[in-house]
Amino acid sequence: MPEKISKRVSQCYKQAELYFTRNFPLPEIRLDLRGQAAGAAYPQRNLLRFNAALYRNNTTHFLQQTVAHEVAHLLVNHLHGSRVRPHGIEWQNIMLDVFQLPAQRCHDYQLPPAWKNLYSYACSCRLHDFSPQRHSQARRGTRYMCRVCQQPLSFTGNMQRKLVER
Image 1 (tube, rainbow, N blue to C red):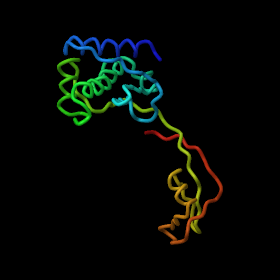
Image 2 (cartoon, rainbow, N blue to C red):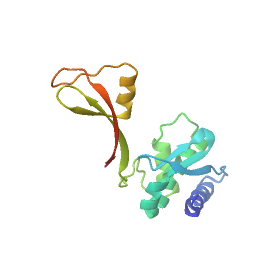
Image 3 (cartoon, rainbow, N blue to C red):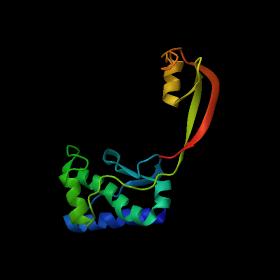
């Protein structure tokens, strides 16, 4: 766990404790989130997860905004319970009043390219690339037809990895 993330989480909690004049239990912090999300809060487990790749590529903004964003979710749960909207007025007020930061729902970080597995299917006129999900459906019996030649598609046995921009 990068020390800077732990320090920023502690700093956010200190700000909240001064603002609300009460203590909050510090969360468990993990740097194991993958995909497009920069962070995720799990209030029932008092857990914060962060995306290491997005942290490395956007360190300053990530520490300032993303960490506070996820901490605010846990604080909302401590203060108001779980029956409030994730980015509702309670969360917005913590972002604006406690952290003096914009209440932005989503990040605009550049996402790194990702590898995607593509499965090759054929008909009588060409090859078709299937995603892992569609390939799985086909293996379980779903039949797919070519829109051009109207012939059934069958797995060729080939799979390729392709780098795709997100």
